[in-house]
Amino acid sequence: MSKVNFTAMVHGTREDYDLVFAHDVENGSHQAERVIGWMRSMDGDSPYHVTRLEHSLQTATRAERDGADEETVVCALLHDIGDVLGPHNHSQLAAALLRPYVSEKNHWVVLYHGLFQGYYWMEHYDRDKNARDRFKDHPYYQDCVDFCANWDQCSFDPNYPTLPLEHFIPMIERLFARKPQTFI
Image (tube, rainbow, N blue to C red; front, side):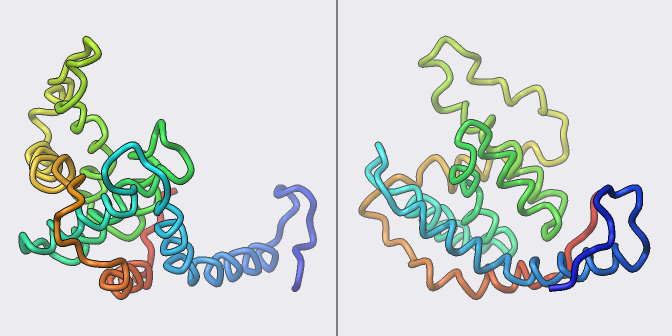
């Protein structure tokens, strides 16, 4: 593999950065494979009646059955993928992964779904279950409320007829085959 001619970025040339960016494009072409692997890694022990993978599959299945568009279905599937790397800020990690490939609305819903899920549990810890209401005037507030109410919070049912990961793999591949938006 070719290497850049610098050891500090300040000394890089256009040719060096062309090499780096070509590598990034190649690396990005394998994103769907990595995501699928991360999803499979979520199929382990869980305090819920379903694994984290099954929860994600169930959330996506509900979204698809409700007629959500494919991008939204994939966001429903991947909304908790951040659990793989950072369970304490999983929403932000999932949103960062998806941001270059999805709409502003879907990014926002994934980014804030963790806070909005607090509506269902925060009062048990003397916290404000309505903390989400600080976003009440945001254009995607209701979308996030609906995401959590209709698909996320109810997707811990071991008896729900959930579609398998294989059903969603082509959707994941299509999403990550999109030309990513750049946010620098």
